[in-house]
Image (tube, rainbow, N blue to C red; front, side, top):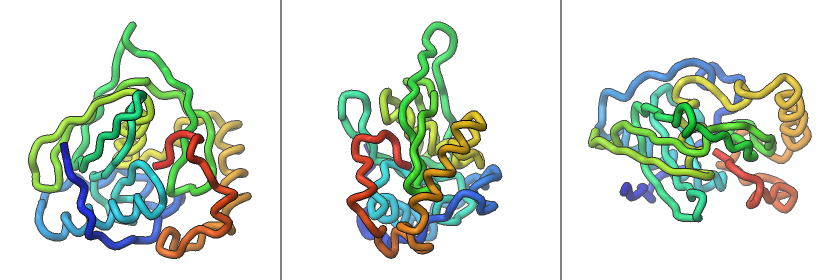
Length: 203
């Protein structure tokens, strides 16, 4: 079980539409101080934004790495750092879809239904280059899929129908003024209007 660093600095959130969010990111090949600083800053940024996961491209860095601290269906939290993630999903009769609510910290304020398999496993290495494997159901399964997608240049809006995507962008536009350009470095305005504690994934 990974222990997430606590000494990072909050960075501005990179938004959908920025190039780094929409192409396959570079694999991690160096595991030194620069990567450790990035991981610590990602954790600080995720926490400041009240998210359960964050990928490097969400702070503008073109690397295949994400951090997470997320509960499974039973409310048991797992946390970790995954570089160069490989996602494994159930197939055949074991594949059951969960149409839960999903949001993205890089499109803040907007949530919609997004069908994903209800179980996922991710393997890779941590910030020290040591092998890691995480698996789970519920929100954790959704988080592992959402963050791995980010490392491959995919946002969850890419998985939506045109109708749902239109609704998602309309909701994001409605709340855009509440999120400063450097959010979450500068706090969100009108916090009470954005209580998504029971809304689903926000990563």
